[in-house]
Structures are given as C-alpha cells and as structure tokens.
Length: 244
Image (cartoon, rainbow, N blue to C red; front, side, top):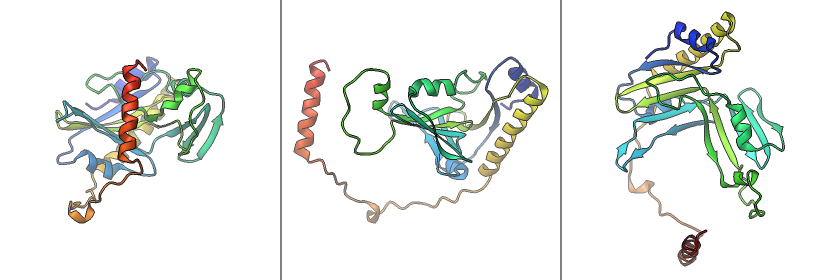
C-alpha cells in the first residue's frame, strides 16, 4: 500500500483535515525494539506492543519519535513543548480533555487496510484529570510533582503488522487548503518525513546483546512494609465489597 499523489489530492480536496501518506515496506529480521533504536531521536518517543490471550502478540506494534508537540496538563493549566520553542505556557483555566479534543478535532481520512490509529496523541492521563470534570474534595498533597497528563502529538508513525510481516510508515499531512499549491506543499513535506524515516530504518542497528547474568540482577526493595501493604489491600477489598 503506497499512497499516490492523485489519491492524496482527492482526499485533501474532499475536505479531510488530515490525510495519511503511506509507504508499505518489508523489514526482514527487524524487531520492534530494533526499529525503535534506528528511528529514535530527541527526548520523546514511544513503543506500544501488547499481547492477546496472555501468550500471543497482538497484530500491530506502534512506534514513533520526534513528536510535533507535547502537551502537559496540570490542573487547568496547559503547557506545550515544540522542537523549536521548548516549553511554553499556553494558558490557564482550560479543561484538559476539551483542550485536547479541540487540538485534534476531525479524524484522519480513512484508508482501507490500515489500523484505526494512524497518528495523534499518545501518552498518559492521570486520575486527577477527573477533578476538571466533577466537583470532588481536595486531593492529597502533591508529593511527586507530576503533571496530571502528558501527551505526545505525533504526525509520523511506524506500524509493524505482525500478522503479515510487513510495516507501514505513515506521515500525516495537513493541507492548508484545497488549492493546488497547498496540497502540493503538504504532500512534499510528508514525503520528506517518510524518506527520512526509511533512511534511518535502512541503517544497521547498534544494539548489542544484553547478557542476563546474575551480576545484573538485583533484589527488589520497597519502603512499603508487607503487613501494612496487606492491611491496606484488605481495606480496599472491603470498600469494593461495600459498593465503592
């Protein structure tokens, strides 16, 4: 599956805000970890894999790096990180999920044969985001200094199809309009991203074997004493049985 310029133009002129440009490749002998090692640049990236039934790899693995931006939410304040500008405060008094939804408004143009996820926001959303949706009592003191949510907005993605042993490199383009110049510019920019990633994937991986010997193993330690942990778990079970 390789997106042609004619197909891209038709989707862009049909009014789709985001249009994936796809190149299908065979990556013989390249694992998801090996592909990520070749592609990864900068401070951000992700590799998503999962199992089905506890013992079979799921069909797709998703990985990306160099996000277009990173969004960080603390309460009702949002900060955005970009490659050229670093962290900047965008504003306060925003609802994180509403802000994120507005940022990603409108789905990508659907392309048959691709997984449903072809780019977008990947990260984590903490429980305390619920405090921007419901009126709740004050939470416990923040003793970790962690944000409530952190999401990478990625417009270039590698998808490994573990069933058919193939891969899709996907660059999502956002034409500024339906005119020929805007469509051509968006296509050219997306194609350049694809070429750059394919070039990285062609370079041999520098990953060395990792020996699993006793010297690398350490006993786990915890500051949560066993009896206290067991007692707290029992309290949680009682809350659940009571309907909480």
